[in-house]
Image (cartoon, rainbow, N blue to C red; front, side, top):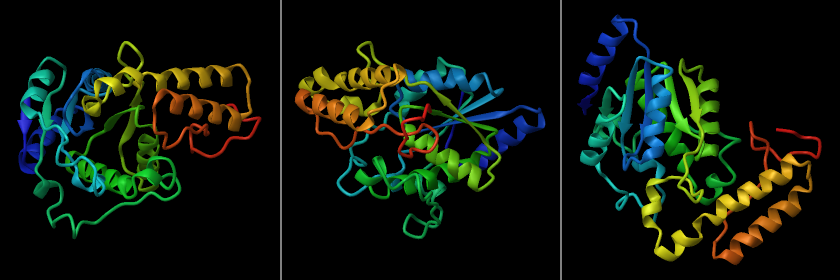
Length: 260
């Protein structure tokens, strides 16, 4: 498996693969890889002959007071984990490669409409950073396919909208969320949880599952379902930014006849 840092070396390998009529899949990550990321590699291999995992802790998607400085950077461990998978390359660029004119002078990409609410409201500017870095990685790697997990559901919708709006020649594939045994979604940031927080974290999945079952059974009193779930989470010890039922394809408020 290759570990590449420069865009020149990246281009050399991708060009060679293209000459061999091989398709390229990209899995954008910030590193600190877990089993959920490794599952993305297996999915990527189903769609392309070559798989690139990018590892880049993107400064533009972190807000003031967030965890950019303490976000785990574990390239050596990540490399060992990926060597046991079907990945062909780690692309681990520096900030100067991704933002050659500097972050302050960088061209940015915004996706209005899908980014104002939910994580966009609680993390202002976050999605602008995500779409900007993903577009730059697409430009550098030029993949045929890009793989994302559904854990960050709003994010993958935003990226799909960007790709469609800009007519980018990249197919977006999403993978089901990979969970711990108790239902907690696997995440690099789970390491931040205290023992007490970890003990109650699976309550979120319990509430998501309960509300999902109610919807499958035909319940359409959305506001009541949201309120009950929010209260249950707060009783368990959560601070709730949002718990919302929305249409799957556009995050719009559903009507009572909605089935998506």
